[in-house]
Length: 549
Image (cartoon, rainbow, N blue to C red; front, side, top):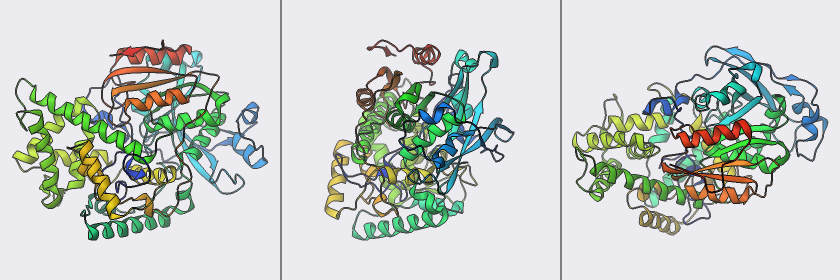
């Protein structure tokens, strides 16, 4: 899920509801960053979507007999226009640029008007390694909203056990608005994104006026460059698209593994199409009932807990901690560095670029996704404070923002805000309300709260389209059981979300992983991996109180 970083497009935190008002665009991190189980636990592999190029050559969806897929969709309408979509069949083609087969299918721009304009949904697959034993396909989503399932497919496929990979095709897709599908576009030049990501508005009347102006300008530019699609990229529409994907793949049931925001796609699909759910794994859950404010508040507490755990780990190291002799001193060092960058950005090794407050905060938060990144946080803060060199933290921020040194390699940040603003209602607030929200955030999270909240302006309150959906508890009882995974030290999708989602999906079972970092499957736990692989192969759930460490 997208992190509430303090920047104009995705991080002007203030919306309605929750412990404090927080911008929906700030409530989700850009993508779940999974580490393949056999990969070296280092920074680069986590961002597999930065490495793979988007498939430029795509196959054409071929209409075929819909058979039973249409009758079992769970949708009331059986209009001829909707039937057309369910008659599609995927025609795979080689896509050398990504190293996988890929294709496109069609979905209605507006599900309320299936006879209207059509949009593209891009797919890619890694075929089962033992075709003669093939059981079907598993659809995957890496998170976001806004992450490309095609760009991340290599890393995601590597997470599955060899027996699962032997029997299932692993299929990635770009949800509507994302990547190689019909996509959101808000900027045509890297310089525009640089400016947008680096802006920092003061916490006073003038700053709020400037922030609102910038928010409206950005929204207008997104609408101009994207067109009508910008108002149709909500999660409910994307979940409905997944049922078209299921039918186009020739699958009677949808087998699905979703990480982080992918759990929201999966859980909403389960409510819309309970009879079509096959084996579904939801790792790093979002709570569909949580408002934007509640979601962001729980995230802030999660990241504050993670940075406190980092500080304790740093000072306990045998060779000492270069940024403090006590945990509190280390945390103060981080806090003072962030405050310093507001008025005095730190030089970096990149010509013409300095470490601004927005980029410093982004870099710090990225390193809290996984405890294997904690040494990068120590190094980055130490270099910036003691050597006046912000290069390491800027590199972290660039990777988070998908900037490769020359260009932004995907539209994740643009799609992220567009999706969130349609999923979470947002309203403007007074200066007094904004200041109260900031004060509450600082009290709850002394290290990160001030920068998490920014100056309290809601970006989505000034978005050109109003929200289409309201957060609410799901009421779903699927015939097939669902496996939900919660990590006790997950900062981005706190463990309590998994507990609540398990209650809402009444046939679901919770697997608890005691550990640090975002999500669990494919990140190195043999216990978690074995439980998930067995479920995907046999449908057998773990016992109710199963805990992995």
